[in-house]
Image 1: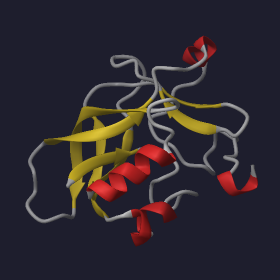
Image 2 (image 1 turned 90 degrees about the vertical axis):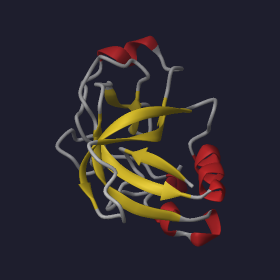
Image 3 (image 1 turned 180 degrees about the vertical axis):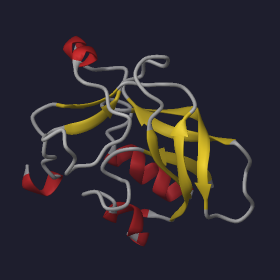
Image 4 (image 1 turned 45 degrees about the horizontal axis):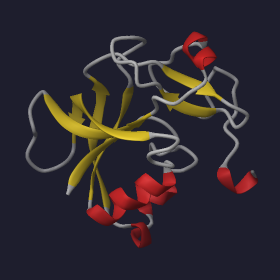
Length: 149
């Protein structure tokens, strides 16, 4: 089992959350909410208005998201879903725990896998940085779901 931190379309109430609920993909159990211990640039970019966390630790905001405990099958599914390692790269980061619903509160922070990207167009660094993502948020950039592409 591993902890995964999600900050974009996989969060509850977001367009791709359903893949975490589909047991055919493996097991994912919501553990709590948190934020990255280090700041990162979270941008919304590309023709489909996808949220991207740029692998530039120390820039941007401490990003808000959700923590899930996943099995190896779900982790493999998420690697494929996120286009790892080409689109996103899976790395370990420290996440500050804000709320915890799982058994055994882990303390102030936990180490989680996170999907970020080090392979992005250079102009993305100049896009607005977000602290959190909502596909219907005030940014006005509507996410284009995969099934519509």
